[in-house]
Image (cartoon, rainbow, N blue to C red; front, top):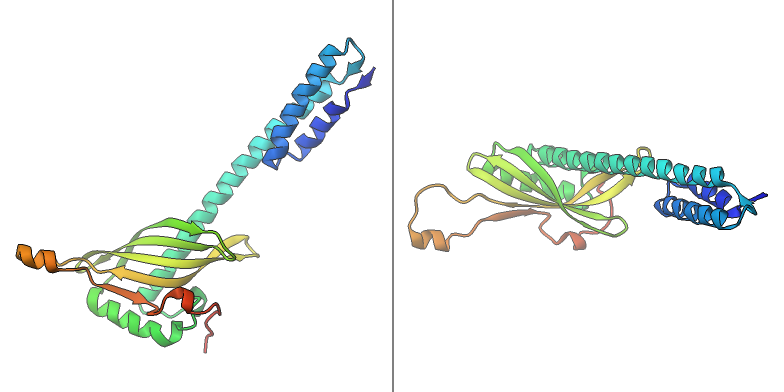
Length: 220
């Protein structure tokens, strides 16, 4: 009695089950092997091998999915934390070249910081969420941050390039643009004044980020 070759194929797929397609394939091939063995009238063996392939596929496949999910969660949390830190430093008056991708960072960022400080300071960065990811090389992430200011809550919309740090395999955001929608005044105004009022937005850089070039700012 010879062992069904599909049983060994199921084991091989089970070993490679860190790939979801291989995990599914290992289970399916193992089940087909069991049917072939059952219908062979004793000519084929390997029931234990086929079951081993199925079990291996399920265990390694499930473990791989769990690890992938936790890694994605860690990457997302790391990215949100980095974006929040970069925005906090920027609004506090710091200039970190490694946090910005646009070449205009050193030339125009201090003016933007002074403008925000005059309008809103002190500023505390609250909830940070990622609203969108644009696939590309590198990918572009868009983020929404709640800014707690003396005039009320403001909304910051941030666009960042997601650059992979190959030493950690985690994406490191490089801010590309920041736009802040100022809070509306809380004082009493007439209906006509309220309808005519528009939220004031401040933006950095002044040009569209797609026109700002793709060269990292220097420290000089």
